Image: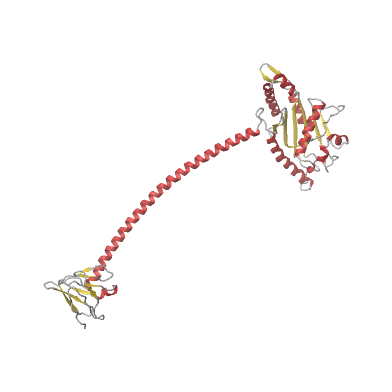
Length: 392
């Protein structure tokens, strides 16, 4: 079948490639089926030789003491069988060996999987604990930030109120009343413009903004005689009189040193004279008590106008110009006689074109031509005296 090779103790054994494999002397009794791990070889019992058989049944005897190493490819392993001691490793025992090794591998892999799974579970538990603690910490910090934000908002609101509130009387300042007039004035303007365009059929009711400027009479003389501290107490008491004489929805503001403004929205301009008289009478009949030992009586003068001035041409005059009319009416009331009120009212005869410019030249010309109507608490024989020019 094949030619038996000659074996030298530390030489190279060469076999025909069809029958044998190539080997090279290395370690004693070690066969290396590359790339498998080394396999030990045992000598035949009772002899000094070791038998190696190929797949065709040919054998070669190696002396004990010979150093032989076989290097074979992976596909060569199934073709080899080793005849050693009876019951030794043979081709038929290889499946059992593989099965045992596979079982060991399965057990090892299962053990490693269990260890890795246990580590993963422990890691997940630690992560969940850390995440829960982090969530709790974030919740506490969020709550603290929200509380701080609420405090800041409250402080901002307080500062805003202080900025928009008069420090002596507690009434609103001019800055705040400007905002009110801008908002309510725009609403009244839209209402009347819509009606004039025919969008709504019924004439608007209670759609006007009434503006009253109230000035305490002879306050400068009182300041010189009594001092500013006493006068401040009088002003505070005067603010209370305004609150009592007004609606809760009216906007009350300190307009100047001794002047105050009352803004009534959603009102009918026909009620202007009624409110003006109520304010005048309330102040005139009130006894001011700035201290336990001191009682004072004083009066006020009032000027007023309604926005829009012309309901048939609501855009002819802005709310700022209407405030100017109320101021001019107050000045006229003071010049004509204190403890009085004067109002300016537009009607169908009042020109709408260039009205703002005409009023800056003074209302007296329009009044003289019956183009602007005057209402007042004076009798018919008293002529209201106007300060010219209106608006500077």
